[in-house]
Every structure is written in structure tokens, then in C-alpha cells.
Image (cartoon, rainbow, N blue to C red; front, top):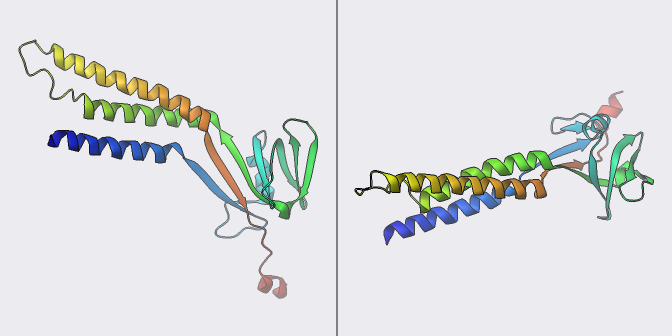
Length: 186
């Protein structure tokens, strides 16, 4: 009975880890000026998001879906995904821009799913203990194949979940002004 409890604990741990890995994302800070905590400045974001379909979240939490997101002077511009109408808002109204990469999500899902399926196969099928009898190792080979099959099924499932969920990139906008001390010294 102790083996079952250890396997159950490993199973719960693996499931917990896999749910945490499914939610993979990256968050970047976007500011108007270069600072030590800044990942992108306004002028760099145009190249970063060029050709991407994005979700633009503005200050009242309204979400707009579009493409060709650009920052020009003090405005953010994009083309609406459904109507193909060009939208413009003041840059200070933009809170977050979210971009998704479905291909990278599928690749990560494939890797995580295969590893998870392999570990689950090892925990529940346990090919290392099978085949202790007089069958010439056939039971061990069957257990090993079943473990590989669980890894394959995990990879397929992980690929589908990863492709649907996608790798998400959050660009958080912080609209700060230059330090007042810097401006006074000029």
C-alpha cells in the first residue's frame, strides 16, 4: 500500500507542475525613456510587434483586437481585426498589449506533454519492475512500450493544449515622465 501512496503523491505533484507550466508567459515593461527596469522603450515596440495580431487593453479595461500596432509620437495606432478600421488612442490610455505565439506554445506543450506522459508511465506502469518471471522479458518490453505510448499521448495532448493556449507576451506600459532632476539640470 505504501507504493500506491508514493505513486499517488508523485502523480499529484506532476499534475500540479504541468498546470503551472501550461500558463507560461513573458511580461515586459515598456516605458517612454530608457531606464534600468525597462525592457522596451516606445520607439522599439514598433519593431517588436511588427506583423503581430495583438490585444490592446486600454485604461478603462476595454480590449481591442488588431494588427499593425504602432506608436507614433504620443498615439498608439492599430487596425481593428474585424472591421479593418484604423483605431487611434493616446499612448497614456494604453495599459497592456498582449501578443500570442501559437507555434511556440505547441512546441512547449509537446515537450512538457512528452515528459509528463513519460513520468506518468514510469510511475504507474513501472517498466523497471515488470518482467521478473519466466517469460523471457516480454512483460518488461510490453511495460516499456506502454510507457513510451504514454509519453507519445502526453506529447499529442500537450501539443494541442499548447497550440490553443499559446505562449503569451505581455507588454505592460508605464507612462512615466523623465526624472525632474534630469530636466532641471538641462
